[in-house]
Amino acid sequence: MGTSIDTNNIALTERYPWQRFAIRHTLADHPALSLERLVDVARELPRERVEYNLGAVGIGMRPEKVPLNGLTPEETVRRIEDNKSWIVLKYVEELPEYRALLEQCLADIEDHTKRALRGIHAKQAFIFISSPGSVTPYHIDQEHNFLLQIRGQKTIHIWDPDDRVAMPEEAVEATVFGQNAHRNLPWQESFRERGEAYTLTPGDGVYVPVHSPHWVKNGDAVSISLSITYRSSWSRRYVGLFAINAKLRSLGWRPAAVGKHRFIDALKHRLVLLLAALRRR
Image (cartoon, rainbow, N blue to C red; front, side, top):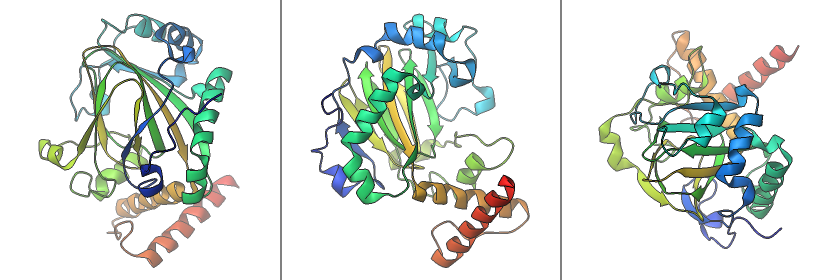
């Protein structure tokens, strides 16, 4: 199998893994990513590995208010052109054809990932299928993410991962800790000018760093995107620091911001490891 992600992109050397950047790929015509095949995948996957809802939502839609579409996953994909929906097929790498896709993409960037990061793990693939005009609300993810556009057009708006105006510490903590933890973030229209927009068509892609806020708006046709994600030793530590800060805040403390004091972050990380070890007993 040939190269899937363009590794001649200088940004892979100069901007990965901390900054966003555009990339190119060669997967737009792959048969495993056709709408016809994805109808079957939506039917085959266990229900807990499919998330879907109506796609006509606001940028700052609260997760508990996102409306369902009343269809099955298979019906949602089959009728995606006119049912105004959004659906993600999760962990498709457990199916052999998508495992091969994931491994090829990761092999393409392996030299860069190994040089920049240690402990690469939790390698996963997600497929997003959405109706014309659908919106994915403003949110962050805990993984390193290469988003590859397969069909249609979408515009993704991305912010710096350390922009504490668009994403205050407490907002990040709420995505990783607590009974109602969710990836969505509070949105204010004043944030818009602080982000950068990337318009993706088939063959285009973008790297989204860990905790980079982003939201997505589809064009006027059905969109299919493949998301290649993974975690690293650094991302696990980084996310864990926000979780421990959230715990400390819930106890009435005012913890120092992540990244402000290296020594304090190191102590917090040891506490995270200790708590994890105790849970395993």
